[in-house]
Amino acid sequence: MELFLVAAALAVGGLLAVQGAANLQLSSALGSPVGASTLQLGIAAVLLVALAAAAGTLTAVELLPRAEPWHLLGGLASALYITAGILLFPRLGALASVGLFVTGQLLVSVTMDALGLLGVRQVGLEPAAVAGAVAAVAGMALIVRAQAPAGPGGPGRDPLTAGKARWVLLGLAAGAALPLQGAINAQLRADLDAPITAGAFSFVVATATMAAVLLTGLRLHRTGRPRLRPLGRLPWWGWLGGVIGPTYVVALFLLLPQIGAAATIGLTVAGQQLASVLVDQRGLLRLPRRPLTRTRLAGLALLLAGVALIQLT
Image 1 (cartoon, rainbow, N blue to C red):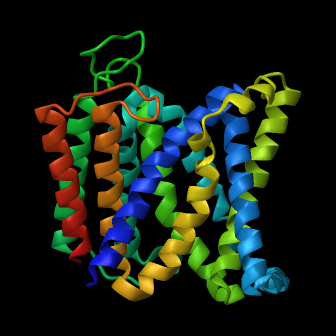
Image 2 (cartoon, rainbow, N blue to C red; image 1 turned 135 degrees about the vertical axis):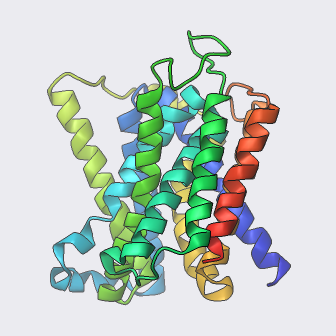
């Protein structure tokens, strides 16, 4: 495996940790997590549509009416994932948030492989996959329990007993949605025979979903109106969330044929975790500084070991 491709996969995974912090800044400026999710997804959709047009594959959308209705719903996962990141990063930190996403992703991936769900080839329940899932859950439990919330609860409180269980469940659900999205989008890619166009449509669906949630909240007076003026004071990297999404999609299309699915997923997950450690340890991107304690380090090692075991199946 070429060193350049390994480095690229690690970097792409690391960008996903940066995306969460960038989206948090966008949310703070707008004063609306839903508004920030809508804007970020809209930027990503525009970029991917432009890329599909440049590649000459945008006309593939004419084949959408032939697709099964459920093949068109992959974008819903992006809406959940982006919004969950905005809500979780300030509450649990980068390492715990990304760890929850990864754990949810691994558990559902193993289940899909074992049962052959959503068009995924059934491979049965491999012992290495079971061991990997157990290690990932144990690692994530260590990371979350060692987490010292930066909020009013003060340091040292267990997130699972400090009213944070709902945030843990949200992180797991958001992570679980990603492999479902991958399987659904794979079906759509086969329908359209145009990977970038399928990715663009997925982000268009995600944007429309969040826009509908935003408009409904405004109409029912349950969400505040997004503030546009503070966007002028947003740091430049606060806009990166809308760029990272399309970058990740295109990178997967390029890396998967070169180094394989298992290596791509394993390396991007490792990149996510390593970048999250750096963000938490240094307090980068305006996030609270969270030291890497021995317990959190042990949890990270278990989580990465679980990822490696699952990739062996």
